[in-house]
Length: 275
Image 1 (cartoon, rainbow, N blue to C red):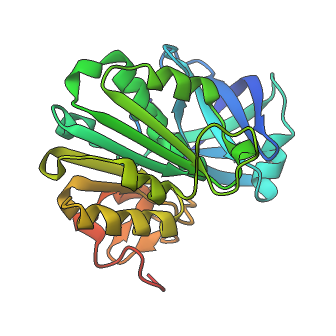
Image 2: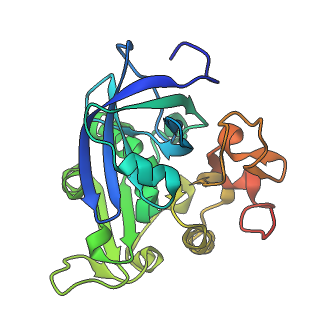
């Protein structure tokens, strides 16, 4: 995407989807751009005019080249304002920013994707890549957990991914309703259903840090080394370019050096209070 990344580009909301009570998806098209290119795991700085900016993961919109999604949970002033917008409204975007998931490095290997809450958004791009290039990878396990089953979004995507060859999708809820068809418990509880080859497995994790730390402990116990574990982190990212310093973690800037990190790069900083 050409232009000054310090300045927001105009994007038009072409569709708005209410995913759950507090979560919605904006489908955007960038004005004057035939193709909006990004890699799985990257994010945009999404700007609500006159209010402020927030970092949001980019979710691919199927086969569209110019249309893409931002799935947003309403948690503050900017996201509340974005949630009130309807199709036809305009927002600003800067990006894409950040390092993506190591898809090329993982080719030929088994994949274990572990997500929680809205942590599934950064990994949608990986799964959509698998839809098109399934033969590039070995066995795939996708584990996703939510607190309440009403919080689960993208039912159609999970059903589609579950039909891919040599692919297993496991869903769980901490406190499910009586009609829930998945497992009960945390996403880490699903590890008991896994049978992996640790030397040939690349793990990709995204979600609450407490969940990722618990998953990392289990993965290490199963023989997966830190160099084969990748995490996507969230911090207070306000510029997207490593200039403002708000997202610094040790010597790293999450917006610029991440948000996707190999665990071996950050094992001395990740999960440590005050860093």
